[in-house]
Length: 294
Length: 190
Image (cartoon, rainbow over all chains, first blue to last red; front, side, top):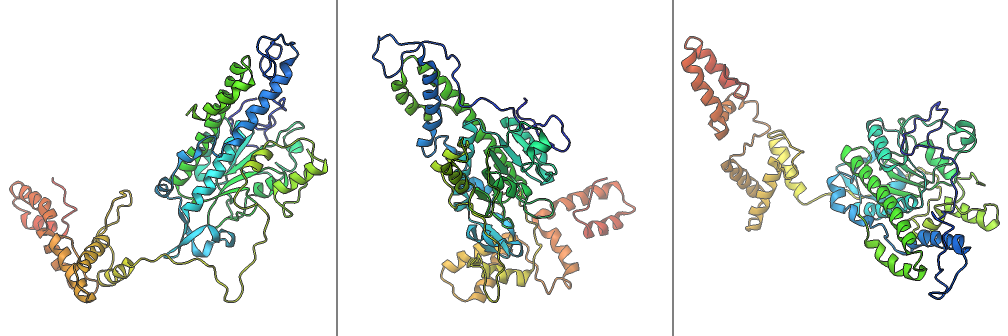
């Protein structure tokens, strides 16, 4: 299974993004090693059977620890309102193209062109990046979707650099809703879909938005002033037409996902090292872990 | 994995949560805990886009600045196109922007009469070397304006080229001089 391959799903027999079912929950590397558990007194002899219980504890710890911090992956430092402004994220379409549901996110209209409120964009972007980071931390499958031909190459390279998947070609009808038929029997659907352009080439909402909502897949999407943000779980109001804006968003997603995966490797290494010393010491170690990395 | 494909009913989260509660869905999906811990600002529930009828209008305000009045007067008097806008440079100041800044400076000094301020700003800018061509008089001043091109500090280049031209070709000298007057920028040394 090759991660990071861009999907041009039309007629591919091998099926690029279906990963074979992988064992969950996470199992430790050495289950048979005899380790004194955190609950026993130091020096007391312990049975070797405590291996699997330990690994389950550790995996729980690894998964639950990041949820306790509001910004475990420190995504706030990746962007600022000023950097969004310089990348022309605030520029929307003309007032006639405006979608009714985008009105709360629009700051005002300058000579007929809608200007998006960057304070709201910053808040939404922080939530969206945080969610993406957590999904990547838990080894979820992320799919980048866009139907804008100008940026399809950029999006495919971004996906390859993160080790995730992209679909920037024609989206066949039942790809998500009829996946076993189109892609093969044992298929894993993505755990998160990131839309860099919510509209397709005829300015209608992309089919994948509605299909992801049907298949209980959360979505993150950049919504411009002519898009419908209703069905997108974590919308990011912003410009999806200018190259600097899309380059910024691709860079942000790539950095977040890579950072989250690196953090996951660090946490696993940390808990594997701290296993013999007991899980009590792990609490002190995890308090220092947000300062690790990046 | 059991799913309910009703995207118009509730959000993804509410449907998954209820399926788990009912016992239909056995395994919690990957994103469930993350959504619980960090919910979005608005729950992603489907809404049908309805048209606005009658006189109902969107509550979006126009973005206008007090400098816009000055800009409107400038463009009605002088038209656009004196100097092209260089959008690659973030600190670029167009003729209009320089005019507005001068106007505000003079206004702070204490003057109140708008027309007087306008004329004063125009004079100040001409003194600083910026060209200001009025809209209505553009056609009558077409020939005269080419003379004004050469009197500018940037007109030094065509004059130096003229000097080069003169010693090299004496016979078509008059023709060269005439063509150089008409196209100061299009000159290229032989």
